[in-house]
Length: 112
Length: 113
Image 1 (cartoon, rainbow over the protein chains, first blue to last red):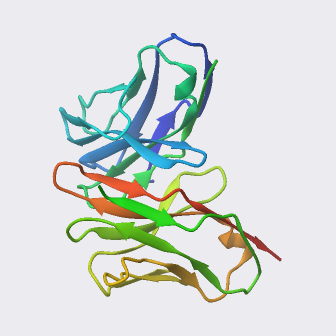
Image 2 (cartoon, rainbow over the protein chains, first blue to last red):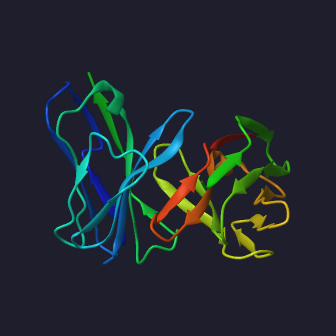
């Protein structure tokens, strides 16, 4: 089954404790992206990647890192999480960037 | 910069009612336009799209027409069902140095039996 898989789906952590949210797609897509969804703000792009080893900032990259060492994986790294990073995070992919994205089911992160 | 404005919700309708969710955009060039739907507890799914002026996107009984003269892409459905209850997002596709979707804030639709 074609899918984008995120882990963990739910996480409660504390300020400053490094964490990684994994994202993997099995569709051989070149384009991948991370979004965060917050009430009243909709979805905002954090980072995106056009292909392996090519990443770029979105609208809200501060406090996040990404890497794209393999085509299928695009992990989101929070080196020192803060409470303002409490949010619902979505990973998405596309064969090439066309705006037609396949989304994962989301990862709800709470930073205390 | 590019932006999308969609009507604020929540919207509550009875089954078989007519649905309109308004979406207007600001963009340079000729963007593509999309409607995504998010069912409870799930990720977003593409509902329909239009890539140029006067295109009509349609899927699952939903329709939207790309109106360049009014910079709009309103979502419509003639007869909603309880299963249409979800959050709907209008989005604009930008390219050329910033490959991303710009999303509206979402409109929550609840359909009652």
